[in-house]
Image (cartoon, rainbow, N blue to C red; front, top):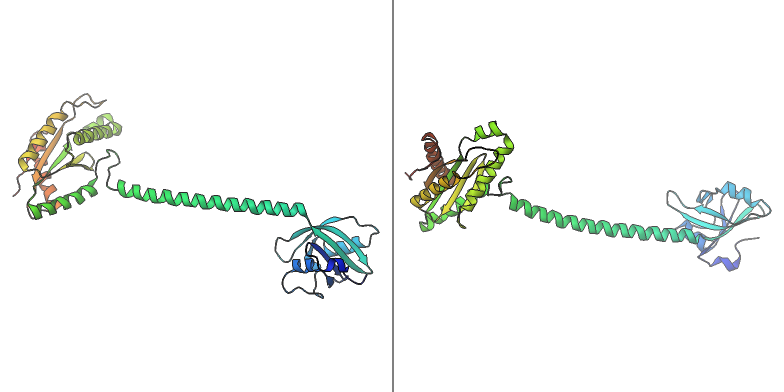
Length: 306
């Protein structure tokens, strides 16, 4: 046999090649050249292209009188390669390979490609969901960044922002603004006697009571530990003091288990002046609160603006 049969020469789905004993390609059809890749030509060394069986094994089997069809794995370099199914015969000392692509292997490759595409689509959907969750989490963080975790009230950051806003309104329109500093009496004793869990419950219940007694325009904030501030826009010092006394009286009736005695608070009241900052306004309220503590606790004290 002098070369590839004419019938096979132009076929692409069928692979045919004639290889010399030293591994040189003597002849090949379109299908084999396509597998070899760009630049492949007759005369090229192709022994390494045969992976399993190797070319030496193929050359040995071709010498047998009848070599049955067999699977062959071929490929270049580190590429995945292809699985063929075909026969080898001897043409003199040369090896003639005639094979076709393994249909089952192709089906498996197609199924694997489909599976990988599905995995990629699912990964893209998951990434899209995670991006939406991240955006939602960022929004929640922005919202919660102004919220005290234990009580759900505003925190110091949000209080300062709102004080700046209403102090600006006071400077522009002479709109009154007052604050009440609130501190739970004997709170260290509560923690020492009943434990921190009971102390947190007292803080939470006081926070709820402050929020329940506030107007819609007021802002109730927990600024640390057992300390709260109630901001009262459009409220004079006298009206704020009345609100603070009402708050002190209402908490006397609140019992928080396992405490055996009622919870009491002390309040300091201050109102703003034209040159106030949030710090100055709160400082005067704290000074009034200190007077209330020294005076026996469970009471409200008003500190007029200087």
